[in-house]
Image (tube, rainbow over all chains, first blue to last red; front, side, top):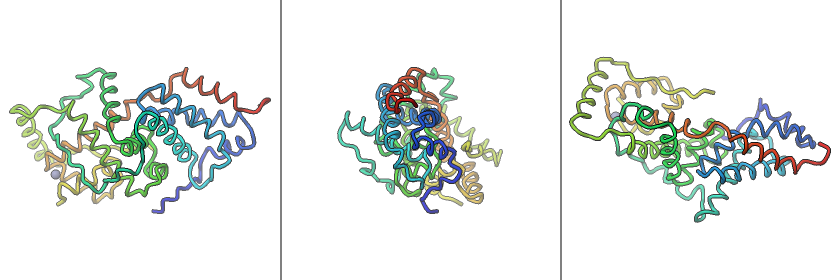
Length: 228
Length: 79
Ligand SMILES: [Zn+2]
């Protein structure tokens, strides 16, 4: 598939036309439609709410000033996301060393899961929701920025595959292999918290699972469907 | 029969339902027989659920209000 995204049916186009003509109300409407997604993107990348707020403001200020430059060969969401990523990364750069999104394209290096014990019942039953959110947020922050961004766009901001690849300027294949690695890395970090300790007890449980699997035949859960 | 590393390399696509029906069935069969892959599949799937639930769905009201207030200063007078 060609990477060029289609903006056919982009619901934002009429508003963009009006905003470019100087209709502030139309721009306000665009902000309302997109601020939640932009905020989640910024917060996912940056962690601190005050940094995310600055990135949120920078994104829309920038979008307002450059709206005329929006070339309609991609969706507005994708264009805006690109601005949001830059705003967030600028904040990161202010905090740490220079960051390049293609510095570590070790995607062809396989990431091998190490912790392969089942998890305790639902982490939700063991930890408070706030606590889980904290653990997850920390796990995401520990990812190298290029992996963090792809995971945030796809799994937090819920862009689709094509939009995520476009926003990052990657081919779909490159985006997907980076995403797989990012997901496995986060899983690994969570497994360290939620995984059962290996011992005789978990071996019994494991044996139970295997027997159940063999008996049940097709009892494997269906793939998670993305709501779209 | 798929190898474990083939299952692993398609795991993301499988979770996102972006594999062919044929491949999807082959992976499901593998997961029934291979405990290690099943655990990785199961815990990755749960990871994604937890991740998507980890951030607030929208900015706090005050954050949103400050954003709109700041933008209003940019708009041309009279609009
Ligand atoms: Zn396997």
